[in-house]
Length: 75
Image (cartoon, rainbow, N blue to C red; front, side, top):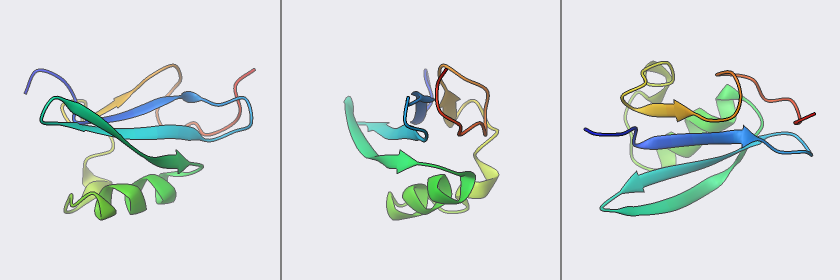
């Protein structure tokens, strides 16, 4: 795999991070996560099994514009 399947985008000004899944050359926005729990729910709904185990695997999840597991608003 050339790039991560899941992208957790930079924190929004209002808090939370947009989450998208990339497959078949297309990106689909799954929603706005405010916690790891939200992210896991989105990934389960997208059909990934055991998503909690994937959160720190850079071949599956790319955290952009902020540290992994950081959900506070952007400065």
